[in-house]
Picture: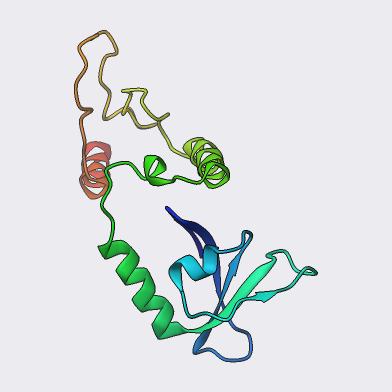
Length: 145
């Protein structure tokens, strides 16, 4: 699992030896202890992630739960104060935006089946139409019948 938080980027995987332990890995110093202050962090220069800690699965779950409960921003990218971390988050955001069916901020919410198409003639700024994926898929099935 890759996890971007305002103060850290973590990669979390299962420990191959003990299934009750997760290996929390980071590329930058302080990212693990920002989320797990009591963690013993090891430096492994021969590995892809320089920093790692072995943490009980339930403690990882509790810390991630607390991270969710502590969200107090309306824009994740703007919550990042470290310049390098912010730059990395922006690059990930940009790369992942290319995997989205419709480009971000395009106002075009049509899908390949042409069921949901809005003309792009309006210059009026407004909140884009939203439809749940479940509703979209149900309407698509109904239209194909």
